[in-house]
Image (cartoon, rainbow, N blue to C red; front, side):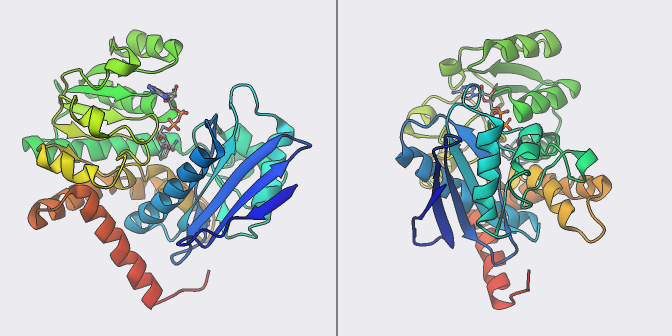
Length: 354
Ligand code: NAD
């Protein structure tokens, strides 16, 4: 395996790996380990170019630093991407090679599930490294983080409703969900159980039909999801969906969903504010998964009750960021970033060994 250091400024380590034997081409970015070792998912995606993959891993790694800082996980920020189609190119040899790449970070980066990588895949990656989290429960890990992410998103969505409408009641609200994967489908389930009306979309028709059958959801073509009138737009697919084009089309009052890096550029946070939309910042509302993973680092090992209790704080975290933004007259995305940077500055001033 050939590992090349990319030396990107603002990051502690970014490396590229190519392993001709298994076909692995991957990137790992460690953004900041001030508050603890970097933990972030391994994303497998068919990027158009390596440059797209690099942009994605850098943004995702930085986002993990802020997510963990705001959620007080005691962890730092990092992420990895594997270039390729998860449905056709994922092999045990490739995943094991990814493990060996992670091993080269010697504990500064821990991998986990993400888009295209499930709990069973993490188990295969662990054949090449001990630095993984989110292993199946029977192997002592915290298992699939998605249900915890989804529960946190549901609580954060309620907090955003309360900020906008003065009540967090979900019953009767219409929510447009983009992406019905591990998190989006579970968010849909919570919303349906609490009486919301759902409009859903996904690029895979089978999951759309599942949501239509299970939740009485109305299906929408992927490109039309930005046009449907709804109280809430819940982006639960990929990043960059809040951009100049979509913001001109959205007909919702609240944006609250699981996707990472929802704002195409930081300035879109202000566009959202100026349009009077309440935006639950992505790295605050979607922290449930890493909060669950962080329970693996507790002395005595993973305890689901500890994890559940901490994920239960996400509604309050979203509410307090939205309040801070309102009081300061700044976009919620900026309020969240300030909070994260304050925590990092405090950590740098009082470093703890890890
Ligand atoms: P997933 O791969 O299980 O689901 C993503 C879904 O989005 C898939 O069903 C896919 O077909 C769909 N999709 C992709 N592009 C689409 C498009 N243009 N229109 C409609 N649907 C589209 O991933 P996931 O684990 O559910 O994660 C969803 C998002 O939440 C990602 O951005 C991920 O980074 C973020 N996130 C996930 C977790 C977690 O615990 N899994 C934690 C934090 C953040």
